[in-house]
Image (cartoon, rainbow, N blue to C red; front, side, top):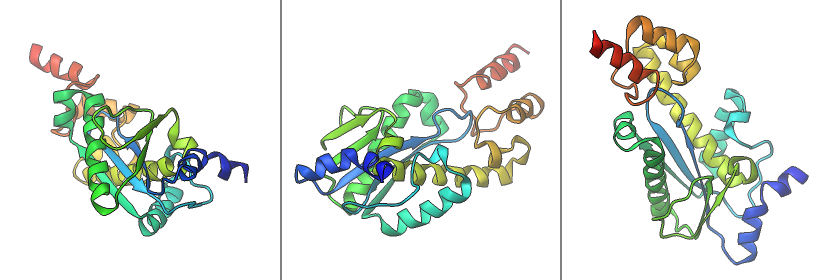
Length: 212
């Protein structure tokens, strides 16, 4: 019961102020060397409880898939924002993440009128909807946890598709993060179009190729 109360603290405070439609926003994919950053915006029913739901990083793949299906079924609104590696290279990962969050919120807001947005850590200065930035929000807010799961499963599925085309990098297992297998594959096979050219060690590889 304590966990349920803890991860609804921010939602309950907003409910007490007469706010019903609360969106949670989170991102996945700021650290990988390849692929897009993906964000999700989710509005859950008032006083919604889903036992075991928490930060997607603390869940197994099987748990994430299960929660993904439940959240997709039960949510009042869901929006997805995706910014490619090209956008990331052009504006940097932080700005690309914010752009993706704006897109996710806009998409979700078309389905249900959002009254307040709870965001994991980041601040969206240009957002017209009232918002609260929460450090470690994916652990503290059930709504942000739901967004975390939607974003994580969405991106992982994208990386699994990329893995079918480029299996040597192990994307279905590392999701594009800089694991030893991934780094070794870059050294042996080079990079692909989906690699982030401004990220180390991808940029180091490009510099060596240029020098040669």
